[in-house]
Length: 133
Image 1 (cartoon, helix red, strand yellow):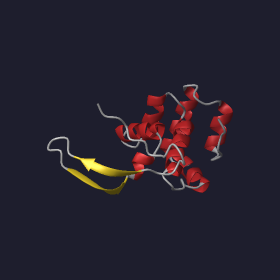
Image 2 (cartoon, one colour):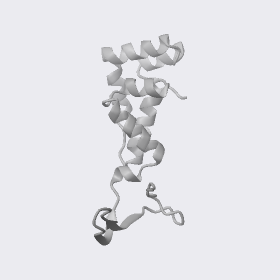
Image 3 (tube, rainbow, N blue to C red):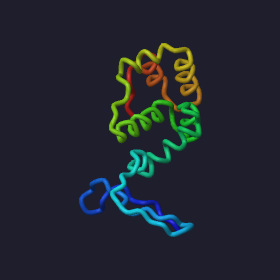
Image 4 (cartoon, rainbow, N blue to C red):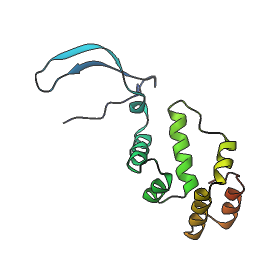
């Protein structure tokens, strides 16, 4: 039986590192200080989101459908993961510019038609404003 390795110390909440690697076939082992990949340090929830994002070929509209949430909620979750990785998501100016794309406008209107957002939220999104959930 194998278990998911914790990424954070339960005592001080600092990042953990791997100290020993072993081969399950021949029993060889290597000891040292091996750092975990950045994605392994994400919470289980964020790792599931990344896996879904990859399975969805990076298309947030597919992610939102799989999660049963609105497009802005899926985008907010993506921004959480981006921040958890130590990066800053695109600025509000970038988001406002993306609203001008026909695909984004269609998505907002589809969310409105499906009842995932209200008409007030749709108007704000079409104007490039953010909505709070």
